Length: 358
Ligand code: HEC
Ligand code: HEC
Ligand code: HEC
Ligand code: HEC
Ligand code: HEC
Ligand code: HEC
Ligand code: HEC
Image (cartoon, rainbow, N blue to C red; front, top):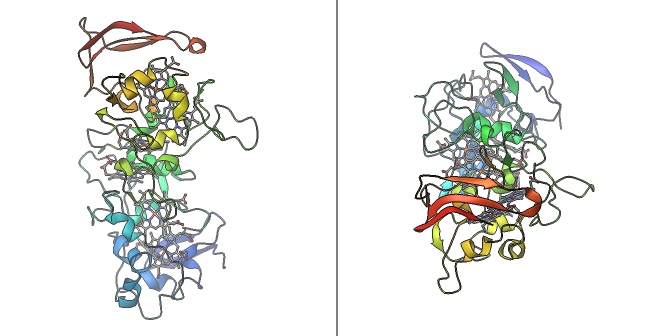
């Protein structure tokens, strides 16, 4: 392995490689014997153009055999190369191959132009010059403070480049950076430890606060979003599960509860505890339905998966299922966390809650 720490003048541009101290995978002669010339062959890449080049090596192995994009001798026959291309054939995926040709080398994210076309090329998440075994986001830059570019050091900051303060965020989506703010009444503990000290359903090693070294009290986007196949390549490329989730999560109403229906949540929250009503006394009634009519509703009807800017316990009612009550009220009132009690003002399945208390 060679460590690059040099400044190169290449095709008239100044490029500093690499700043983070890890051996960049693509600048290792053992991986890419032709180094820069491997990808910079007969053309400049100022218009982007990463994706096709990337899958020459990270796609279907036959592409390495058929290669015409790269100069002779540039591809070593390395065993164990993962087929990332195949991940993008799955139903739920980043639009890397669905909306090609939109990335620009000079762009800065989050996007400030509301009309800019949404995209996610390989090079939007991985910088080919810096990417290393230790840090797959090395060299990716994002605007934190207005117009000031800084290196992304955490996965979340990489995601917020497009799912945070982007001016071109499609209307049906929300700003994830805001949903995870530590000042919200509740949030999944991604930015820091959570606020709720008695999340009774948590399965070890997950815990509200870290006490023992084995405890896990903060999680990542990638604990929920990523490959459905745990043995396949890591990363939020594609999944058989909706919303590119690592496990199934049914968000519909009028459904049968099963370990599979809410498998994602049951990874960290005990199904027995939730359905045993250890916290919310009417969890089972809503999730499994009554003993006669065994149809229930999804966690999604009452909980947001990221955070709630309004209420505790990630409460955010799904407007497709829940509507204002007969007095026009739609709200949740919490009555002290130690007692697990509260009030709901809403209408659902024709049942008026004005309020209903627990
Ligand atoms: C000429 C072949 C080749 C091309 C082209 C190529 N890579 Fe790689 N890449 C490699 C090799 C070899 C490694 C070393 C790790 C391995 O064996 O999988 C690697 C590693 C990586 C890693 C993981 C870091 C690690 O070492 O685990 C990422 C992410 C990556 N490449 C992304 C890209 C992207 C994005 C592009 C396109 C801009 C690209 N690669 C183009 C050969 C290539
Ligand atoms: C694994 C493929 C790969 C390797 C190896 C690679 N680059 Fe690049 N390079 C790219 C891609 C892809 C882009 C466009 C990135 C973007 O749009 O964000 C790029 C962009 C650039 C640019 C700006 C655009 C242009 O074409 O002028 C420069 C300069 C550059 N690379 C220099 C280098 C140098 C110097 C090396 C060797 C030390 C190198 N690159 C090695 C893939 C590679
Ligand atoms: C360069 C931009 C970009 C980055 C960085 C990015 N995404 Fe995306 N993502 C998109 C685009 C574009 C879509 C398609 C829908 C849209 O326009 O928002 C998408 C879709 C998704 C979806 C599916 C949404 C749905 O309705 O099915 C999820 C989940 C997601 N991204 C999570 C992540 C996570 C987690 C990260 C960080 C590891 C991340 N994204 C990083 C651009 C990006
Ligand atoms: C990777 C583990 C993990 C997964 C998956 C997960 N959670 Fe959590 N969840 C946690 C942790 C850790 C906490 C504790 C946060 C705290 O102490 O405030 C938590 C807390 C909660 C809370 C209480 C938040 C509060 O502030 O009162 C709710 C509600 C919740 N999760 C619902 C869900 C639902 C619904 C799903 C499935 C969509 C889910 N969780 C999936 C780890 C997870
Ligand atoms: C505890 C699990 C969990 C974590 C952690 C998590 N997500 Fe999600 N995410 C979900 C679930 C479940 C859905 C689908 C249902 C929904 O929208 O609530 C979803 C939906 C999405 C969507 C598409 C729909 C929408 O609401 O915009 C995007 C984009 C997304 N997540 C991005 C992220 C990013 C970025 C992070 C990290 C900063 C993250 N998620 C962390 C579980 C999670
Ligand atoms: C939306 C962001 C995003 C896009 C687009 C994206 N990746 Fe990734 N990629 C990730 C994340 C997240 C990981 C997991 C990083 C980690 O291990 O923490 C990853 C991991 C990888 C790895 C290492 C996998 C492993 O198991 O070691 C390779 C190789 C890779 N990506 C190549 C690519 C290539 C090639 C493309 C384009 C065809 C691409 N990625 C597009 C986010 C992305
Ligand atoms: C009808 C609305 C509703 C539905 C549906 C619902 N919940 Fe809840 N949930 C609540 C309320 C209200 C609370 C707050 C209880 C309290 O006062 O502490 C809560 C609390 C929680 C908590 C925090 C306390 C604990 O038990 O650890 C978790 C985790 C949780 N719910 C997970 C889930 C999961 C997972 C599902 C789906 C399988 C689900 N909920 C379905 C209303 C709902």
